[in-house]
Image: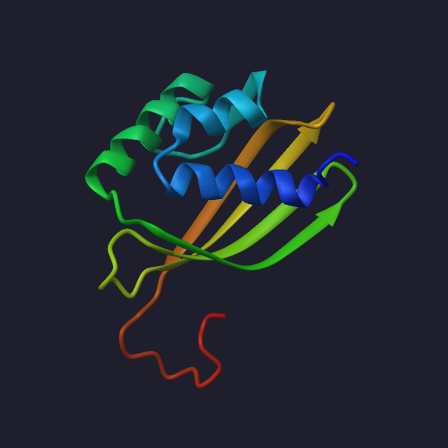
Length: 124
């Protein structure tokens, strides 16, 4: 049985967080992949190199998946991401669009977690 799109999206993020960026791309990224991160060019190589650089700077990154939603060819992963063990981190949502079981498009949005939030429910 093939992995679900949800499992593929989570596996991609886990590989990237653990520093296995090229393996993540090899397994899950389509040759015609594009992304919407506003800090980098929209092609696969630009984002892959940025992910590798971030991984080298933050080798102990922590990705804790909180929820995953799949609808058709779209998967959304809501995660707690810490660049370093002591960081408060950020709430991040990655939205993947799949085609033929590989990722063809990616959006990501993040929100730093404030130290002193008045919201008793937290960000997760």
